[in-house]
Image (cartoon, rainbow, N blue to C red; front, side, top):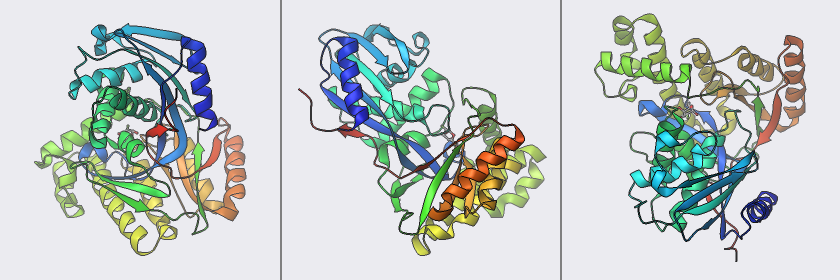
Length: 390
Ligand code: GAF
């Protein structure tokens, strides 16, 4: 049991005056490459990271759900009979939304017992590292076990996505929950977002003398508002006009026809998705054949495409990328939904301090908020932690 587990167990006991029967945790994620491709039925290559959300849980003998956490003073209580999306709001909408969404995937909520749940986390919120998917997936694996549902991991990913879409109101894809559920130590998850076929791709960063540095710009983003939904709508319009079910069904050879048929903005949105899908495939192939030291150019190209074609970057993200590259990173890009959040910089270990110092100095010189910089490692996906408690 780690410190986070111990804290969640103790805080559960303090808040609810009883003992948790188990601890489950799920990681945040960082996306190596493949941005906004997930809701276009395309390819993504994220990894689960060594920052986790843990839930301590015990079922009850009645139909009440009580949720509490280290980041909110209040304890929220609802009955399983009142669990509809319209009734859920605030941070507790995430765990409660997962309980509701399990009902949409076969759990018979009319007969299942209520539960007490306490949430603790060291995944930074609003940094583009999917603290929300970590929370959804930790709750999903916990309830899957204590409610005896036996849902497989791709289905649990759909449960988390549905909670996010319907309850939180963010029209997001399947990538973040899949990464949080399927990640493995020192590997990325190569996911086909149409079939949900997933393959674990070894990264070998540390043997290659590389680190994955996160630059959290601390510019907050929300996918429940404007830009994300607008990009999704453009992609859907582009696919409709091109006569395909999803942009996944186009290749770079279709781009001249797309340019002829689409207005300039929609064309550039489409070009990002089509080329980004290809970059994911190229990255997987490069990792297999040449190793992680050879993927830097693909990361750089991905960032340019998001900056110029998809237009989801921000001045802070662009500065982070340019500065990290100039100070020794071999590839860098913004990661996640965009409009803020984090960039990644694939950096030789010996250059990490120099990149950190250069980025801090550049942000200060531009008058930007001081960013948070830290190294992450690829970690295992959601799991029950430790042995059963008694
Ligand atoms: C957010 C969403 F939640 C994901 O589904 C994905 O679309 C990502 O932005 C962009 O690649 O993290």
